[in-house]
Length: 359
Image (cartoon, rainbow, N blue to C red; front, top):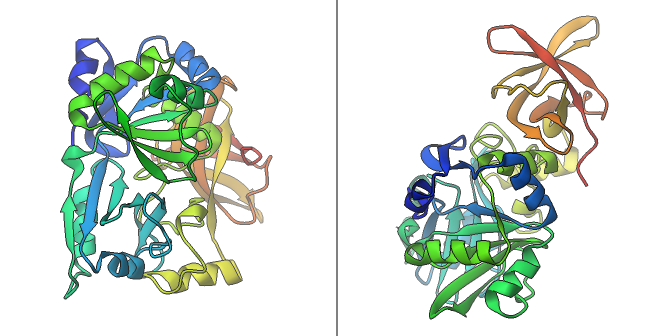
């Protein structure tokens, strides 16, 4: 749905809302009060995020599996019911057009999209729909997930469910009985899950997770955690100007799958290299925000050159300074390399140093 079903609840409780940087027009909590305490709680336990405005496209029909397998960059046919993966629809030139999470059901597929992207994804898929027995539907109105991640997330899920959560591979899902209804649990990683009880019960699920010990987190802490971890954000760090390898989306495409849109380009990059840029983490020498598009400049071969662009900025509570994600050109990607920062008007705005890869 375009609007999270939890917004009215957040507003009634005095939570400050802000527009999502990745989805103009979509509001989400900015923070829930004491931001440093929110960050510490998320680090020590588990962060709870309102993702109720994510979109969803459902594909049904006897030809759905062949249709999706022919187009998408990651596996489709080899997935069994209850399995899923991160996936992409690329342009013919191999660049990222849409990113989403694919879930296989016994009779259909669900594609969970970033906020505001479901309609455009359905329309893009329809352009390849000719004679196949297939129906593509925007089912965002019944998709209202919450995100839960962190070292303590498993324990919180156990308290919520009254039993240990099922062991699931990344992007696998299970429909569980919960409080007289259905709760869909999707594993996004070893300590990250998405939970969906539907729009009508989203507030009940939210409060139950908080009571179980989850720390409500807004966009400030979300971005601090993801930039520290070097995770790209769709619509901010990922768009049609980048190849999946440049954005670190290696788990969202397959090299052993066979043909799909953009596959030849992706395979050539893997075989021959040739990436001109890569998304990396940079430590800023101050804590003032940086605008997307801030330039990274360096003296190179006796000439001052633009060698990268900032796409995301966040304040790192762990480092007590600003951090950024930026695309840095090859030959200049070594940790410790320091760039001058320049804003869109040509003004100097500090220095940024590449840090070692997270983890």
